[in-house]
Image 1 (cartoon, rainbow, N blue to C red):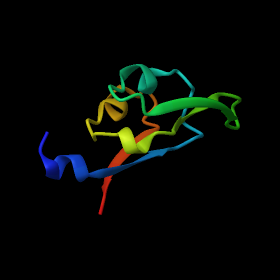
Image 2: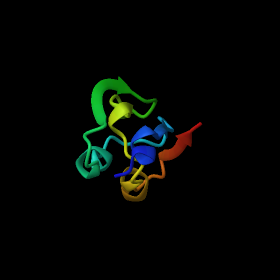
Image 3: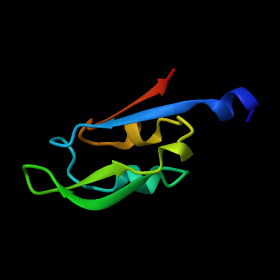
Image 4: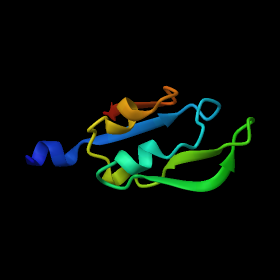
Amino acid sequence: MTMEEAKKKFKITIVEERCKGCGYCKETCPKDVFEFEGTLNAAGYVVSSPKHLDRCIGCNSCVMVCPDLALSLSEEA
C-alpha cells in the first residue's frame, strides 16, 4: 500500500429500509468496519452500521456481497 492509498477516506452509505441484517457485509469486510447495534428499520430488521470507517480501505467487498443493494461506497475528497 502506498502512502497515497493510506490517506484515502471512504464513505459507506446504507439505505436502512433495504437492509435485512444478513451480516454479509460484516462477514466479508477484511477490516471489520461494520457493527450491528440494534437499530431497527421499519421492517424490524437490525440494520448494519459502518462504525469504523477509519479502517475502510475501499475494497468494495461489502457493496458487491449485499443481496439487497443496500450499500454504496464512495471516496471522500
